[in-house]
Structures are given as structure tokens and as C-alpha cells.
Length: 415
Image (tube, rainbow, N blue to C red):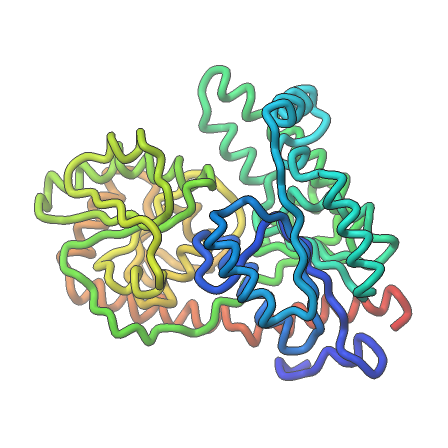
């Protein structure tokens, strides 16, 4: 089916009605990768479907959430949010529940009577054909969708990413990590089996989820991040860069490894080089221990301009699952990338062609220095990465794959 095909066949004589359920508000200029992807998906869905949105508020700053509501209102016929109020007793109860292997802590905190009530109200008024549930902590609401077909937008398969995080934690932190992993693996296997389709960003995530429970209908649809590549910003000589949300543990673990084990080696060889970190509210201890030549830029208004300004963008991730959105964004911005193997997962990138890929700290540092020094290598990596990302992560390809998913969900209701 061609990318331009309409979804109208999904619902007789009308566009399909899709309710998106999210753990937070998002919109144009969102600050973290998951929110950026969620809004990119929404923009594509809005081309063919009638959308409504329901999510938690009180997760981001009031100013950011006000701006997100404006963005959402441009694409949705209905936008509603429920304040997420978390008390200390709620955190304690959720933490104890996770230790007892009942529910993951984050999922427990996102289960509120107010959201249950709001969901029933929106379903009754909007009458969706499909409920599109975003992020694992919201999967539990599949049981409250009144029999409507549900699509699970996984974003990050905790069954995989939690396993990797637990492996890296020593002592009691490691024990707690394994308990978290068991909680998430059981939670995802139990809830995901109730969905019409479970959408993942990578084939690996789909295989892991189906392996844990063969009843999980997992399918990889990738991500729609467009074709970009037109930034007028020139790369700054000697500048390396990294961007990420500091509320996402794999970003913290990867950046800590880079600052402690890689960056000192780069600075020893290139004392004039700089490393710029983009992202809101970096932890104080990380900033204090960053070392020489490191700048924390905070929120950047245009992430593609940020990447384009880097002579090299580093993706030093040592945990996590799915496709790393920051890697694709950097490639689409025309930046040369040095990454770990985990950092390029799901991108089909090849070492030496689309990125330099190393897991060893010394080799990673040497690759950063090579890209900073070698104009020809940098230009070749940038061009190849841009072409590769544009071909693999086009919005058209994503829409075609999702069209098939929505039609299958509609067919299950007899449309």
C-alpha cells in the first residue's frame, strides 16, 4: 500500500478516531527524546485521523505544559489532562510494592483514580475506534478501555533496558535493579498481551517482548523523524556534544561513563577541545565532577541546530533499549557520530560508514579525536549518516507501517 493511502477504509465513511493516552503532555519544542517522538507520531497520525489526547499534567514546568497544550490543540479535537499528584506515602507504597514484585514503582505511581475516571469520560464522549497508549507505565490502562482495540506504543521496552541497567549496578543497587527488572518483565508480559498490536522502535525490542510472552503481538514500526539536513549552522571546530533528558537513567549512566572514562583521554590529546551537554536540569553532582572543557548548555531551542554545531556528536550509552532517538536526530542534522554499540541499536548503522562505533573507553576517545582532526573522515561520516537516516526513518515509511496496524485493529472490530 503506498504511503499516501488514506486511513478512511479503517472506519466506514469517516476518518478513524484515535485517543492518545500519555503519562505527560508534549508538543513542539519538547525537551526529551520520548516526547519529541510522541509529538512526531501525533503529527503523522493527524494527517489521516481524528485525534483526542488525554495525559497527566504536573510533570513538567507550568510554562512548558501551557505551550504543549497549545501544540496539542492544533492537532486534536479534544485535549484533556489530569494532575499527577504524588505524595511521599504514594512513593513509599509504590516502592514497597516493587520490592514485593507486585508492580513497577513508576507504573504504580501512574495508576490514579482521577485518570481512570477521566479515561472513561473521554472514551464515552469521543468514542474512539482505537486507543493509542504511549509508554510502558500507561499499559495498565488497557483494562479500562471498555473493550475498544488498543495499540501499545512501547518507546522503551523495560524488559530489555531494565536487564541492562541491572547488570551494571553493584551491590544492593544491583539487587534492587534485578527486582525492578522482574517487576517490569512480568508487568509488560501481562499487559501487552491484551493489546491488538504492540509497537516497538526496534526489531530487538519486539523479539524480547514476544520471547517473554509469545501472546504479545509485537511489531517493529520504527520512528518518523523526517528528512531534516538543512540546518544553516556550521560545525564548530574542536566541539563534541551530547544531548539527553536527565530524567532517563540510560542517559545518566552513559554520560557518567563518558565524563569519567573517555573525556579525560580526549582532553589529554586535544586540550583545546570542548564538550557541550544539552538538557534541562543536569544533576548537581554530575556538573560538579564534569572536569575541564565541559559546558552544560541547558535546554536548547533547536536540537538539530545543536547537533549541526558539533564537530562530533557522542552517544556513549551503556544501557537502554529501542532505537536511540538522539542518534537518529544527530544523523538527520548532518553530524558525525561516535557511539557505543547500544547507541546505534535499531539504526542499522555500520561502523566506519555511518558512525564510529566503540565500547572500549580508550578506543572511543581515539575515535572522537580522529573525527575532530580529520576533515575528510568527518565529512564522509556526516554525508553517509544523513542519507542513511533519511532513507530509514522517513515519515512516509512510518505512516505506511502504522496504517497496516490501524487497519488490523479496525478489522478486529468488524470495520
